Length: 378
Ligand SMILES: [Zn+2]
Image 1 (cartoon, helix red, strand yellow):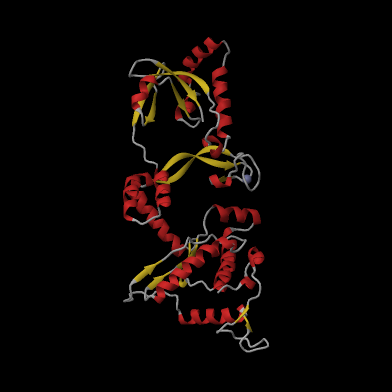
Image 2 (image 1 turned 180 degrees about the horizontal axis):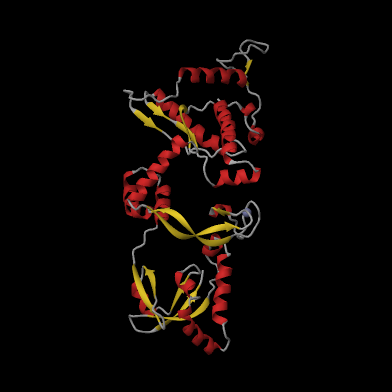
């Protein structure tokens, strides 16, 4: 089925040895005996692929009387490098399934398209110094030729490209429906920023030491207004509906962990000396009697407010006690800077030594009226 000879150089090392055996469809008559013919993929495969395409064998039919069957691959991002073996590994398994279903009499929809928007396209265009609108169609052309030479049974009559306005008008339309229902909203969220590439990066693009995998620059976390979808609104339904699908146990468990439902309560603590409250979520409110301190993350709004002048009198008192003027604010500032430069992986790694600095503030535990010191920590 595969025409290995016209694959990208990524696949060259996987090229199999020439196969010598009987091939009923062989178009060549070479070889000493008529029964022993060389398999010539260039001739045989292109012959059948042409016929499949002419006859439209892989096209799903609208309003067919046959039972429907829909199977979908993740549409590839058409990179400049061409196909890699990972694409073919998953697609050929699905292809066999789609072909089997057709043989069983189903009207099969096995579509193909290009997931061509986003950071990879942007970064590749930056690297090559060419506009994405020029690069994307070129890459698609290359991918298409490679996929066609593999003889995969996609329905090319329904090919889509996410950068085509005829396609993305519908992603825009659905976004508007989310927006109208309050399911799309903007919020300040921490993003990975590469100063050198002047772009935001996905967590996967930041190495464990906090550097950008492509350029080696130390990345930083910074708050940025982003559009978010309120998928948490569907968390309970996603959990409940796992009972209605036949996922393997391992996949179901991953979903459960990813949704990560925890039941608990929010406890508000007043902060001594200022009109401020800190809200803590806990699954164990019964342990609150023994709580002795509160830890806030470096991105917490309370930490940001510490530069506010109304906090100054309290900070002054702390500094008077310590005898070092301006020490607290400076310590906090330095700590926040260090923490924001750590990668997400570093910050959540288990077994990592916990660090923090005392903010100088005390939260009041309303259960017993005692003071808790307040630490900033990642
Ligand atoms: Zn970079």
